[in-house]
Length: 163
Image (cartoon, rainbow, N blue to C red; front, side, top):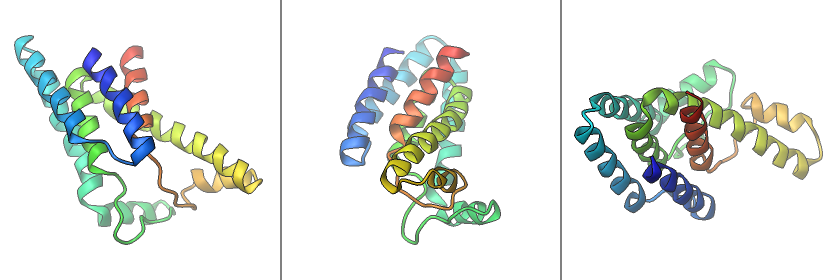
């Protein structure tokens, strides 16, 4: 689990500072996780990584689908030419799933999204001076880019620890 924890730390730093989660960080941790899963005969973890990848890849590869979901729930669609989630987030989630399984990744995503809404809502409140901005952000009425890697990583680790 140590490689996953280190990956969360490094990916969080680069995502906050540069807006990117690099392959040079995620791929080695993923490969080590696959090797450990095979050695331990934990093929369920490999299947979990495939499930997590599929789930996250939908949000990455099909922004039109994400926009339809956003509109169906009364939220602001992703701006044209943008993606709801970056490729680094997909690879981070997949690498973490090799260590934790897919359920902590899926639950951690929900927990991370909630934390992102609260923290970014508070930041927005401080900038605008109106508490209503938190509600607008939570309801998806304000579209604001967020480095999701730190929230995703910490959410997954918390869910894995509480399992």
